[in-house]
Image (tube, rainbow, N blue to C red; front, side, top):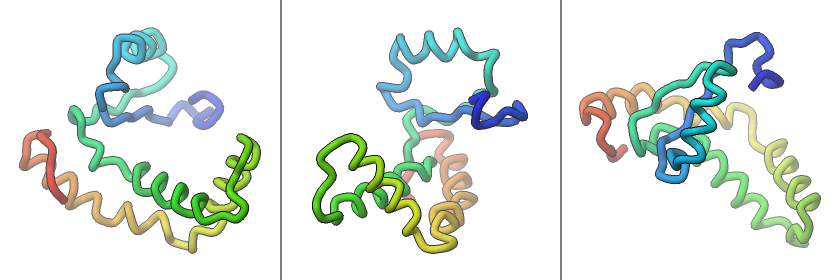
Length: 115
C-alpha cells in the first residue's frame, strides 16, 4: 500500500468472502491496520467489486492466446498484453452501474443482491 499510495490516501478493500476473513487474514489486517485505511464492505458482497469483471475479461483474453502460456513469465506477459488491448474507456463500463448497485445493496441492508 505504501508503494502504490505513497500519499497515504489509498484504501484497502475486500469483499469479505470466507477466505478473506479467515483467522490468518483477519490477524494480518489487524496487525497492519495502522499502515492503511480499511474500507468496510458488507459481508460477502462480491457483486460490489468490479475486479471480478476485469479479472474475467483478462482471463478470457489469455485463454485465447496462441500458443497458450506455459510458464509464469508467459502468463504475466499474456496478462499484460491483454490489459493493453482493452479498448479506451473499458474500465468505465463496470464503474457506471455502481451507484445503482450501491442503492440496491442499501435497500437490501447489506444482504446479497441481484443486479
